Amino acid sequence: MTQFDLTEDQRAIQDMARRFTADAITPFAAEWDEKHIFPRDAIRAAAELGFGSIYVSEASGGIGLGRLEAALIMEAMAYGCPSTSAFISIHNMASWMIDRFGSQAVKDKYLPAMVTMARMGSYCLTEAGSGSDAAALKTQAVREGDHYVVTGSKQFISGGGENDIYVVMVRTGEEGPKGISCLVIEKDMPGVSFGAQERKLGWHSQPTAQVNFDGVRVPADNLVGGEGEGFRIAMMGLDGGRLNIGACSLGGAQRCIDEAVAYSKERKQFGQAIADFQNTQFMLADMQTELEAARTLLYAAAVKVTDNAPDKTRFAAMAKRFATDTGSSVVDRALQLHGGYGYLMDYPIERFWRDLRVHSILEGTNQVMRMIIARDMLRQG
Ligand SMILES: Cc1cc2nc3c(=O)[nH]c(=O)nc-3n(C[C@H](O)[C@H](O)[C@H](O)COP(=O)(O)OP(=O)(O)OC[C@H]3O[C@@H](n4cnc5c(N)ncnc54)[C@H](O)[C@@H]3O)c2cc1C
Image 1 (tube, protein in one colour):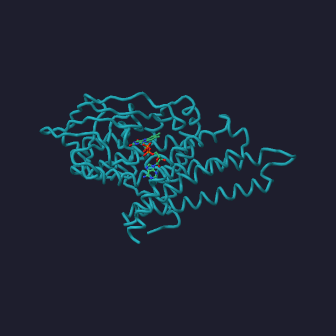
Image 2: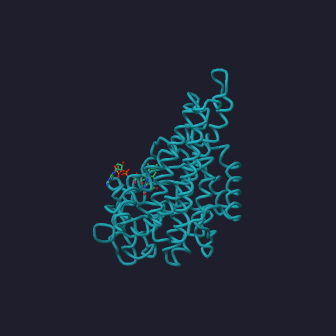
């Protein structure tokens, strides 16, 4: 059921995430971006608060919260650094897939170190030849006794080369979604290698690389869910991932609005603060209004995913589409209000502009979100 205000507990979680961000993320984010520093210590400090296992069950060592709480935490951390927040989101998604669908043995093997983020997890779906058409993936896993032998390559993997645990969608059967399974593969297994770190427009605080598998022997116990269930599991993971990415856009865009409000009161042209121009006021009013609309939709979608509502996937797609497009549009206007200074690295806006841009592309492009929404509408209509 949709809820229209946060509970006391949710506000406490939000406050905690905001305090953590102000102390451990915001002061350092510009340097992480400029020098491409992967902030392992700050990420592990976030995990000490439970942020590495937000919706992993308490039985598996997580903090067992819902998707709205996760969105609040991601939004708060993105106020300091969307790239770092999104990295932690992807780890949460990979951990949740193991917790929700893995056998007790695979949970015991991986989750204790993942909840503390002593070992960090990646989600591996995309391949060079299959992005939006993810079900066309080709990475093969052939069963040989009590192992799978995995050969293929995953493209654009967040955490690639740095993370220890890779939750990988592989083909074990027929073409299409029903022939896909989900396997946990470790960085150190013989035959795992990585491409060079990708050079990117944004998301500089986290690594992105190709992950290659050359005859990697993976214990059959590392299967998450049954054979043929991998695509469904991957898509369920993405319902939550999309909410988090949308939340990262909300947090980043709110930061840029706050920066624009402060700047417009300070900056004088034509003998007055630019905040006194009605154009500035109307821009700020529209930016905040549009962001609140996106926030309300995203929080409603998060409650639906927590409740496993029948329309949860449609809502997660609508929220991701709307929050990420709105976020980028808000940041662009915040940059405009900063004039030429907005374009300089002396102010944080250009970093948020670059970091938020990719949110319309990954975890399903916003065109793919429209396909998911329309397909569901037409099926029901
Ligand atoms: C920084 C970064 C990090 C990433 N991290 C991960 C990760 O951790 N794990 C992972 O698995 N993947 C990851 N990805 C991959 C990401 O999910 C894909 O890039 C994305 O799904 C799009 O796939 P593609 O790049 O192959 O684009 P394509 O699928 O080739 O799309 C190109 C364009 O065509 C459009 N298009 C495609 N099909 C249709 C259609 N049927 N109708 C209309 N338009 C269509 C798309 O919307 C897009 O505009 C990451 C990507 C980036 C850039």
